[in-house]
Length: 278
Image (cartoon, rainbow, N blue to C red; front, side, top):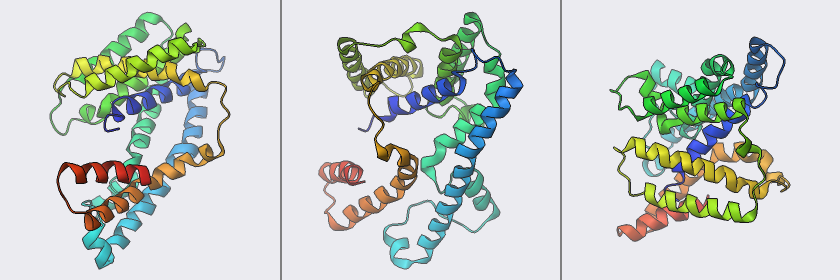
């Protein structure tokens, strides 16, 4: 469970890039018209909820600090210091709404990279762009460099990878995989995830390759649910996701107060117990 972000986050950005560009290569509309339509859609589905939840959790943080019991026992280390900087970061970034970090990056990528990627229709240039993003993702940037900031979890690389896959319409993406192929992909995913847990973070190029293989394997495994009806609760997953961070924080804090802190056992209960109950 601790290594889910190693393929969950890259997969999210790959799918996001794919969905943003899946109609570009077949649409007869000019690029600027498609860009306008995409941005209007993302404004309603991403930007407005992003601002609403940011303000909501900033206000919750202020309330938590004002209540002594919560402030002393449950409130997180992230503090509201009543400064203009905190207000701006709380509304326009995700200082008090950490679980929404991916929305911020997704909006940045969609806004600034759509016109550029949409122009790429040849395999050679798509491949060059993916390689370039892979190289940029492997570089260790000095603190304060914006390019290093947006490479969080190598998200830009996987967003571009998904968008190039969509614009070039590779056959393996639309192929219907049988259970044996899905089983092989699942086993490979488990093995790769186990390997990633032992690879040092300094080996970024190796991690990039392993994460890419994992993304492809999980993509294939999802074919198992191709004909599955979407459950009703799936319509509120965004709402649940936006709340889960605060819920899990409270549960973990209760564990810290009630249970004796005896090393690894407490860490396991706190980590997995909080996650399961949430």
